[in-house]
Image (cartoon, rainbow, N blue to C red; front, side):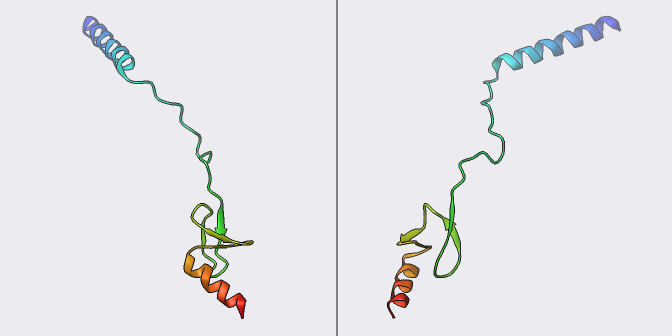
Length: 78
């Protein structure tokens, strides 16, 4: 019985070594929350928050769509 347990343990250890040697190395994972965060801006017309990279800027105001930008321009023109 002891021999059987020895061979099972030896086989399991060999299997573990083989799996460790053949697996590709894992890249170091980033801790959560350290991804590049995109700044959010608020649309001056409707108040929706959108990523700054998708927003349109006119002077100091940000807009979620071109329609809101043009609508606010006409409203300010009055």
